[in-house]
Amino acid sequence: MYSRLHFRASCRTLPATIPHATALNGEEVVTPQDIALIRSNFAQLHRRKIETACLFYERLFTTMPGTRVLFKTDIEAQAAKLIETLTVALAMLNDPTGLNALLARLGERHSGYGVRPAHYEAVRSALLWTLETSLGEAFTAQARTAWSELYDQMAATMLAAATPSQRTA
Image 1 (cartoon, helix red, strand yellow):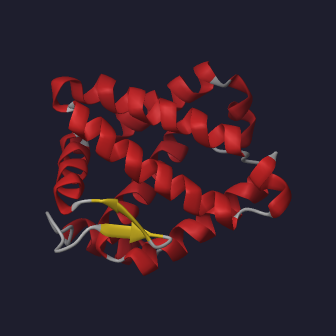
Image 2 (cartoon, one colour; image 1 turned 30 degrees about the vertical axis):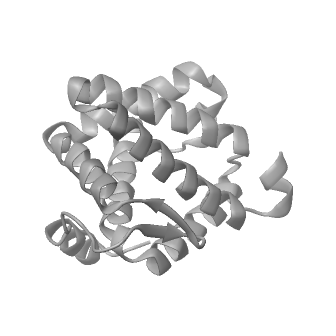
Image 3 (cartoon, helix red, strand yellow; image 1 turned 180 degrees about the vertical axis):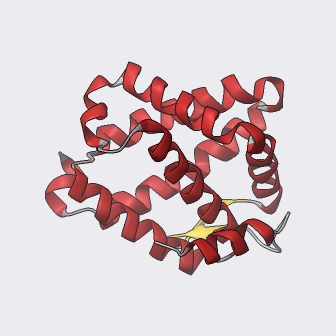
């Protein structure tokens, strides 16, 4: 993945908006306004980021208990990895080529861990629930749509990089 130095630099240089819509796999995903909203939501979670990520995993394991075995580390360590990955991915929204490459590597790695398409839907549901629970009224209908569209494209990119047998399992 990215070095800690790159991660810290990404955190400092998150642009509020970008000049055009972001495209993943050649498809326009979210507008600059949506990106600003997503980044604003994410920034609001900064002080509670590990707590929020742990809440996400609790929800995931409650709604799809079979996912627990996919994680070999303790949940706080996994939560930190999730936050780091989201931070880097959101920083790369102005670099679709780099983001596609990052997501492809993640998709390949996750397929090796045993992640299947059904897991992506469970993660989507847990993510949206966590954002709504953690952000309250700040998680507007527009924010839900923006996060949903971004997640769907990111998941599609990751799934496309999975081995053929794992794309359909």
